[in-house]
Image (cartoon, rainbow, N blue to C red; front, side, top):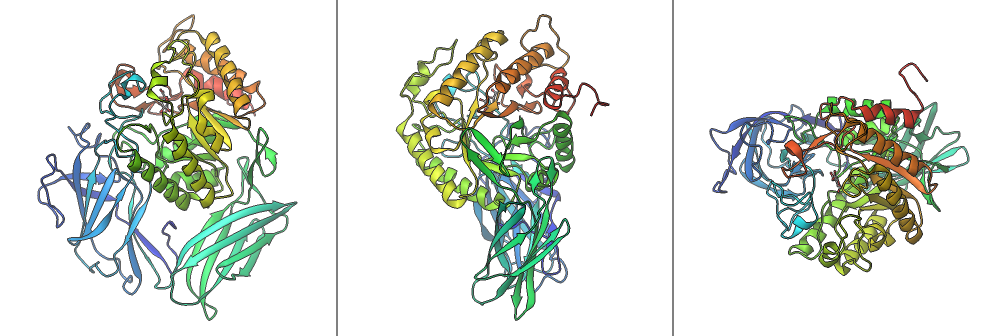
Length: 598
Ligand code: BDP
């Protein structure tokens, strides 16, 4: 799905601003044609922390706004696009139902050409934020207390972040010509010093039109006529894209009727390759090691709402500390975040919203369908970003049997052998095959905590492993934890050779709390925990990545292991101030002690 843009054939108009909201607590409403007397809400932003008294409301909320059609759009095809609505959205324009979309973090659009008026349009969106077993990510799963987040939590999520809901990213009106470019797929290759850019496009069916591709940037200007919607451009002495040097070219696709452009679409592309070679990840043929974080889209008041200044801040912090990558834990991030990763040169593990899955409980068939839908939508949305180097199929899907889970040795956290559930193995076989069919160019990963018994790792190219030894296990004993982690990682690598990413490790830390010798929750503990774990990871050549959990503290459900309903594993606070560990990690990742060095 192409992101809307402004040029001389296309226009977009952002409907962000103050809308009205009506909380329909007993689901009594039929407000398709609007409602009176709602409260005012800023869109985009979650409602929970914005509207006083609604923090824990996860039910149905109707949103509405009025708009006029921008001048000059008549005669074009007109659409309305929602960049993210969590969780389930149903949309009406002027009382007419346009459709619905399930899943909180991926875009959807409806054509409104024949329904939109010049003036006084009423847009109504019914948002359902409820947690349920047949949704992904799920909630209200019976029996999960044994394994997630210290027992019962409220709201009852299967995942460790607050289930913010609402219209969380912009809603865009846009228009395109009657005959328009509908899709562009770019795949780049490198041959010696040359960059090879393969472009495929699709356009509105019905008329046979030709295409032209032009690439500009870094002294290059290349143009080619498309054949059957496809074309290849070769740039001799190309500038390749990489974190240290994120060179982008502008690719313009034009749709031509007898040589005259009827539509054009421009996108930034980066020429780069990503491959797995034995235990190494190769970017442009050179081994890379990922240094970075799991992160969250999370901030006071806006919840999970798009906050452009926060994106800039987080990239600034990641650059300062020497990170070159992050994972979009645990759902796809905004398109703005991805565009900036291309521009600023960050490598992204792009994760679907499949977090905290279960495989025996009711609703499995629906959860599997949703996981497949998300992979399709994610790859469709992000396939052209050079920053995306890996698709992550899921985070911690709880693939072992409940019996195996109950048999954990809580002091050591070892899953007993032969514990994968057939339903989980089957689900991941299919998800991996789907991702490969949709994008044969990128490796895939699955993030799991099940250790060497994670059967579904057989389907992926890169192993991503989360573990908190020295925290949830070997609590208070950093050395014992690091030593045990080293053994565990070796065991995993023996069974599943290939690049290994330590995708989560970390320790909750209350800023300003100190202890000598280091004690859990103190700044000293986090600093020593991270330093020692990083040193151990650096000693293993097959470790291709280390992602600290988390860049910043973030909001969670309430529960006994989440003081004040926060996860404090950030090395920056929720308002982006450094904890002590941030300076140590910076030193380890950049070699710099102070600001003046380097
Ligand atoms: C892992 C999850 C992550 C949690 C983290 C933690 O992937 O979402 O926040 O543990 O417990 O299990 O801090």
